[in-house]
Length: 584
Image 1 (cartoon, helix red, strand yellow):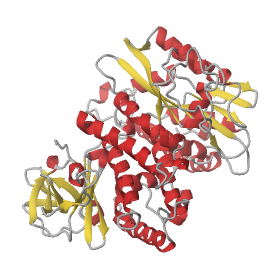
Image 2 (cartoon, one colour):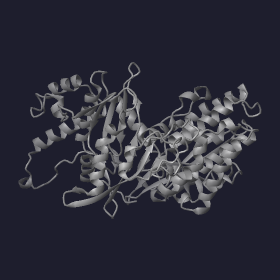
Image 3 (tube, one colour):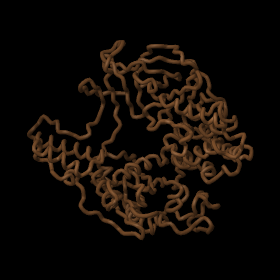
Image 4 (tube, one colour):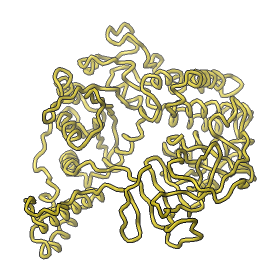
C-alpha cells in the first residue's frame, strides 16, 4: 500500500480535498484571483454545510448576513448560494403529484464527475421503487424512483395512481437510452438496467401481480408476458415496454426477504410459537436479552446500531437483524434454545455467509452447499415437530429462490435494499413542513445535485496523542482507516484482525523512519471450532479463542498484510472471533 503523506497539525492522512483549490505557481495563467478563489471555496463549503445539516433558509440567510461584511462577494439569499430552482415541473396524478428530476441528465452528471465505467463503455443501473410515509401527523406518502440518484418522485396519498403515468417519464427516458446511447462530450456509453431492487409489495405493484399473502404469490412464475395464469396477474405492467425479463431482473431483496422476513420470523416463533418444546421460557428469553446487551461494548465501529434485548424485537432495525444473523446470534443462542433450533440458525447463518462473499459464491462446492442448507432450513423449520407449516410463508419460500439471484448478480449486498432504505431516511429529513411537500423535496434535491459527488473513502492515519513505547519509529498513531474497515490501538473492540491464519490485536500503529507504516500486534494462535454443524466453523474463519492467550507479542506487521478485520465477542469465559464479512 503506497502512502502519499500530508502532515497537518499532527495528523497524517491520504486524502482528496473536498474542493479543488488553485495551487498554480504561475499567476499569469490563472483567470481567477486568490481572493475570488477563497470566496468560491467558502461558498462551496457553506453550500455543503447547508445541505449536509439540512439548515433552514432563515438560519442560512442569517449567517450570510453576518458574513457579508467580511466577504462582500457572498450572496445574501440562501437560494442563490444553493442554486435553488424557483420552479418545479410537476405532473398531477389521481391521488397526488409527480416530479421528474431526470435519468439522462443524472447519468451525464455522474459520468462527468468520474463515474467508474467498465472498459466496454457500458453503464448498468439498479432501480429501486419504494414508498415511505413522510410525517406521523399526515397521510402523505412519497414514492421515489432511485439509483444511483433520484430520477423522480411521487407525493400523495397511497401508491401512485395510475401506475402508467407515474412511470411514464422514466420509461420514455430509458427507451431513449436503449435506442441510442448516452453521450457525454465526445464519448458514447451503452446504458442498461441490471435489475430492479424493491421490497415485495413494491415489486408486486409495479409488476402488476397479486400480493405476497395470496396463494399464487411466488414471483418466479415464468409466463409473465402471456399471463396464462389469471390468478397470478392483476394487470399489464407498463415496464413490459422496456423488454425486461420480468422474473430474473427483479431481484428478491435480501434485506426484506432474509432479515425482516426470515430472521425476525424465526425469533418470533422462538418467543411466541405454539410448540412448547420450541418456545422459550421467560428465564431463557431474559438470558438471551442479557447476552445481547452485554455485547454492546464489544461491537466495532463498522456497525451503525448496537443490539438491544428481545423485548424490543418489533423495533429492531435491519442492521441489528443483520448483526444478529451473521455475528451475534450464534453466540447468544448457544446452549439456550433447543438444539434443533440452534442448528437451524447456524444453517441459515452459514448459507448467508456464503452468499455474502464473492469468492465463496464463485466456488461451486460452497455455492451448492449454501443452496442445500437453505433447502434443509425450509424443510426442517416447517416440520410439525419444530415450527410447523404455519412457519412457511412467502418469505420462507422465497429463500429457495435466493440462490438464483446470487448466481446471476453476485453477493447479496449487490442486490440489497439497504442503500435505498438509508436514502429514504435522508429523503424524509428533507421535508421541513407539511406545506407544498413536492416543491420542497424538488428544491432540496436540486441543491444536493448542485454539489459534486465527492464522498470518497480515504486512508487516514490519526495521530496518537500520547506516544507509548514506540518501536523503531518516529511517530505513533491510534487509528488506521482503510476503505473496508478501521483498526484502533485505543479501543480493544476495533483492534482485531487476521494475520497468517491467526487472530491478532493492535498494540500500536507506527510510522517508521523510512516512511513505512506498520502495526505492532499481539497474536493468538490458540483457536478451536466454535461449532461443528453443519460444518466446522473454522471453514469460515469463525474461532473460539478461549481466554485469548497471546502466543506472540510485539510482532511488526506491514499494513498491506492486513486484509480482514475480526469481531470478537464473549461467550461465557471464552472469546469468539468472527470475520467482518465485507473484508473476508
